[in-house]
Image (cartoon, rainbow, N blue to C red; front, side, top):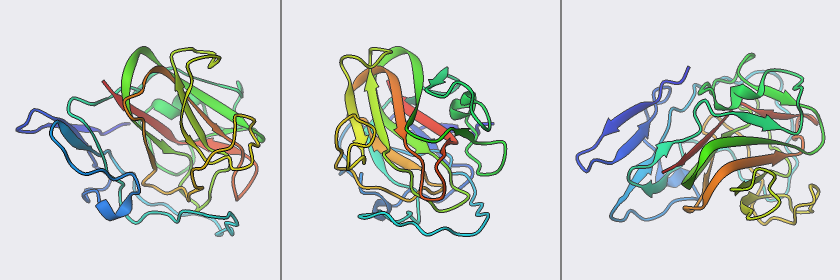
Length: 232
């Protein structure tokens, strides 16, 4: 279960902090860093414990961003809250091979069996309905972290249209050859780790968050442990 703790700062800002890992976020760990400014606060979350299993597999991907050694840092507006906890998740694969789509917003980020959902091979997506439009600050994604691997064609989009037919904003796209057919992206592939991938949502107003992937460097399947959407 989620052990997210909320602290009220003197400035009345809400800050989300880690129980699984008490270490403070490091500015050296993230490429998403922004200078502090008035009305902004650091976004952190519970970082799950490290659990590495199995035989390491080679990761042969150009321009690969290595796994971080500490939690990333992103400054978000004061009053930012976790919006996705317990929200409904749908997807392109209605019958996951392992687990349930509900795992993606249940708050559990551990790496072992029973914490991740496995979708079939090929391009697949999952979608979170926040139940109301909000100004989104960040999306924090854990695909799988008990083995170092990189997921192919990771695309994160948001919209107020549940069908993503209009008003779509792409927040992250490392599909460099347009395998998924949503256009080429310029973001770099990255190694999944217990620190997750923190994506700046830049205040985009949206109710729905859709995430794509297309297998990974260890096998052809698609996995998710947790996705957190922050905003207000």
